Image (cartoon, rainbow, N blue to C red):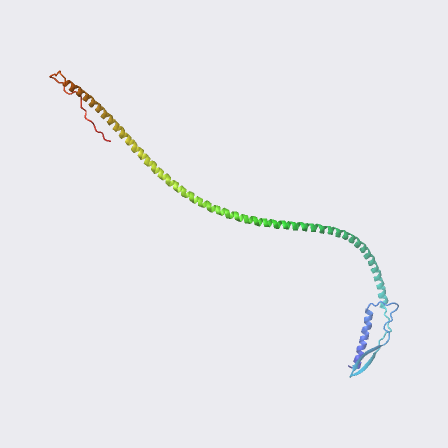
Length: 254
């Protein structure tokens, strides 16, 4: 590197350091001594040989803004002290809040105990719910069995209804036969009444025959009396003849 370029760079770096020191807020006790001594510059190598370049730094300048900065800093310290006083008051209030927070912690501990008790009750309720679910499942099984029994009873009822219909059909058939028998019985009664009328007619004819027989018997008795008179000792020349009336028998037909 060119030695003149190195000098130029060193001067620029020195000026930058001075301006940077003015901007930094250094708190110095006593007076600011600035930058004392000489800088040894930059040591480097050029062409394989060590080269030392001295860069003078002007350090006799006095930083006058430092005192103003210090006075502003003291003002800031006064404000900071006031803030510390307010912060102390806040600490007192914070202590009161801590006391209330401690009370809240006690109440929160009590609430946690109640929550634990409620959790125990919830667990008991869950156990009871599980038991109720088991009972409900058992009831469902019983209901299914009852439904099966009802279906079987319905099948038996339908079978009984079919038998009842068959019995009704048989009863209607028996009623029809009974009606036929009644009609035949009525016909038999009519024939019986007709036979009774014929019997009455036969009785009348029989009574007529009996009367004729009685008449024949009377005539026969008269004939006997006449024959006895005819066969007696006193014979007469005249004869009254056979007395009586001969009635022939009448045959009746039904």
